[in-house]
Length: 271
Image 1 (cartoon, rainbow, N blue to C red):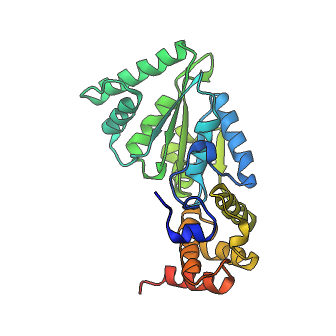
Image 2: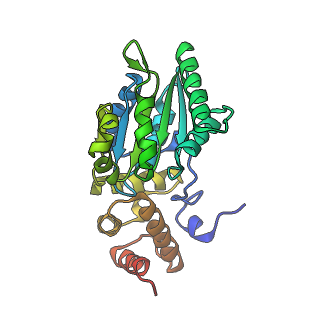
């Protein structure tokens, strides 16, 4: 299928800021590479992790990078994003993700999950539970997670919990009722807001990956797009795509600051 005219006008082979991108083509800013290294090291050491950050700072990208870079042999990653479930349904959800038959009662579900974790340990496979949007986890689930976090042979946990969420998660876990779980989390990561250079790197990477050039955006426009989106990737994708479409309609070969300012104003307006 022939790409749309706005894509062709910038010499692109595809939409540069589309959501569907393989893990192998995933972009991470240089400022996040230390975070990936710390996360991988923590999981290799069978530690538990909490990672928090505001929306759009790249938490999902970091989890995808972990999945891509962690060796498939020796680890079993399970991703859970349905954080609003009650305790029994939460464990049933994890069981289904692991391919375990989910029993009827909370006790039997937990027993099945515990047995599976121990079996993986005997097979020298370390399970890693990635719990996204974890700030939404109910207190009863968090209170029970410390039991899972305490499963250990030879002083090393049988699984790693990676709790990911908004900054509220950090505050929630540090409350007295969750201190037992909080004290077992040795790797604590708080993601900083993206830097202007991160935005430049991201736009350049996505344009070049689609066959284009970074010169599609003027340098002062790149500075403004960071300011207008706070460096949040989803917002950059939306605004940058709108800029390229509008520039193509106006027969422009470069997105300048004036055009970008118009797009940002329109993006923020309900009219």
